[in-house]
Image 1: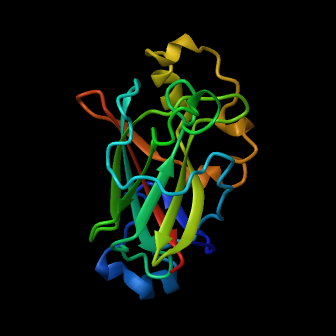
Image 2: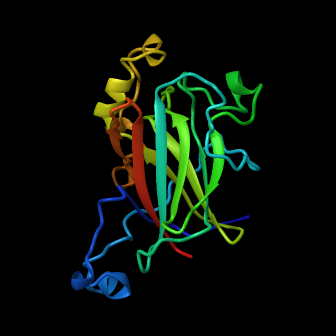
Length: 217
């Protein structure tokens, strides 16, 4: 797969809206009413593994606070949804461990997966809230594939206040005093604010994290 393109937008799904009267579509983009081009790509980091499974539930039974990750992919030029794109995600488990590396070397699959986008540009995953590890703030890695090419590589972030609340719960509270918050993370400081997830907690206690990613075809 070719690595190329760049991130056009990484914002909460409800963060950009324009009615037809305001000039949605290409005209809206041209006029500045609709803006999808917001941030550059970010590094894939050292923990990417090729050939991940196509699946929605990526937890493999590992413990953690339930998280539904909703990623919308849109065309950065028109802001229109992109159907049949492949969203590829990977992140640490509740203990801050990646599958395929170090303590997680016995498995190459937990907290990793791929989903295709639907007609609304949505690819959705069932996972757990990521744990922290030394030197990094809380994050999820993401790639977007279109037509066999990688058109976006980035990282998705959480509000510190939400992470603080989650980390007071088991099993996260067995590892208190995380070392790095968003403002202290060198990668977050390079565009991370515009790659931050919109997170809410459902009545059932499940966290739902949403973001829209504009990409160049």
